[in-house]
Image (cartoon, rainbow, N blue to C red; front, side, top):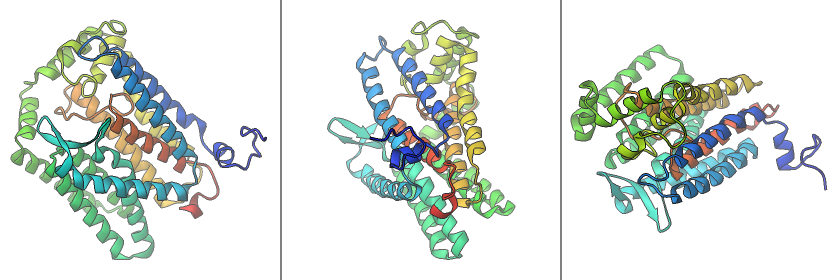
Length: 366
């Protein structure tokens, strides 16, 4: 039996492993370890030890998915992503009908022993599909592909407004706008899309009470959760108070999601918080440097969009913890608790690592 670590191995795993940039796996694994520490520190508050067991199960499944997606051929990956996209797109239609409500929002579908959030799992695959249709339009000049993207955008807006999930919707609009700008590279389009995003934000403010409430409290500096978060960050100082010794987790709800970053700083210090916050853009930079064949427009723009999506969501979570933006309920990728979020970013990390393969077939296969 041939050793799959040998360079001449022609099996799927062996041949794929040698054209991967191995260092791209480092940051997802570091984030995974930090996530385990963060969730472990919550045990003894409103959460039992069951939380860490569930988190580790979600993490193992997600890492298996990440590694699997990073190894398969690009054409097969795109077909799998298309299938995932169609599946969760259909489930997104079912959310208003069979989903269950939490805090006034219907975003989850329950399957007895677990629940999923289709809008979260749809992010990576839908970005790839949207980018692929733009790529086909550029190559063929066939307006049908552009029309498909317009229909997708409209349907996503309507379905997320029905939930409602304004934060996720704004992320989708931002990423879709970015993809269009990357492909068309038109300053007028950039200005138009910027105004449309601002207009939609204003419309959300005027139409949804909870959006107006969060923005008003942010502008008035009148949010008790954010105030507690900032106080905890000050308490942590440069080096933190130690694992499990923080007090923020006892006084703030949803600490395993929304304010996990503040808990990390309180217990491990500001320097550690800076380290965590820079991991996402560092992954972005490493990915860009690892692409040796930058000639494929689809690969380049998809990688850029997925990495930007990852950094954007990290910024939103961190920014809401330190009062840079209003709280949104966004998770911190691969650190916050949540099976849907973790699996979503496993798909994104796996896709980015796969598309970054240094192989001659980069141009042809895509």
